[in-house]
Image (cartoon, rainbow, N blue to C red; front, side):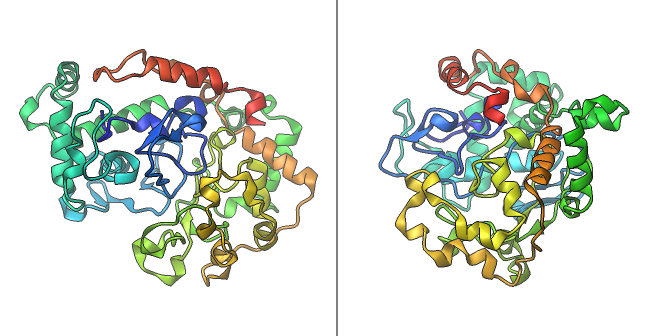
Length: 401
């Protein structure tokens, strides 16, 4: 129901059966059909979301105060947030996760749709007719749509018993979405967690050696540190540019610099948390690496890795000629912000680091089918489409490998 054309939902890009992502390098939002890697465009307007869908694991852990690859949402005080809506952001949002939940419905390519669109029920897309800068009206309109559904009325009344329905806003819906994500997808039962709690048998000898490399000579922990295995900072590590790019700089994506306008932030992106990283591919801000090993090896020698990158592994849509010039592919390496020192590791070292990274994955996260409801209050399809995904994309050790 949150999609203007009713062809997208949060689960479109954050599916439990594919590591709370969608298994695509770049997501297909409005105009697509199907779920997870099987999703494809069914309209002539084929616009990819320019960045990889981040997983929603462990958003409930302390320190998760910076959202999106470019950090355009940051919690600065307990009640203040840097955000794209500035002072128009409504009060009452409980955390950065809730603030993030306010914005996908405002994106035309992700969920909102284009002027003149009709929803899958052949009704006019009201959300798409709102001006791009009038986010408060988008939020008010969406909340009114939610409250036309009797079961949602009941659920909101149960969640906010002291607030009349007429006084509820989309911030209350965003708080509810955040509470669901944090409660449902936060896991601290990985082999690494058990090892830290004193269970020496939780890690294989290879994974233990990988941990020593990770926190030692390989230098991974310079950026991937703390309980979330991220410094929540922004770095340009020379990732090859693929896809449409973002904003006026397209086909380039300037990353953090789009928010700060600082040259030192060109092509810098947030250090991704690594919990459950084995099941959250494709990897990097644009999903350029289809295996975790390739993502790890990029750090060893970015210049050579970019030179050797095989663009034929990407979908036809992502290989469009105007995105694939050498200058575009290597732009991040040429920027003054690029700072990644080559590291000399053997194949055995890389295998050990991969074993350690796999130990960061919760066994619960490997099969999240229990989180999928049989129906939703809006009455829009859930069961059939999701069951098809479950049949097509088994979550198994073979898939992770």
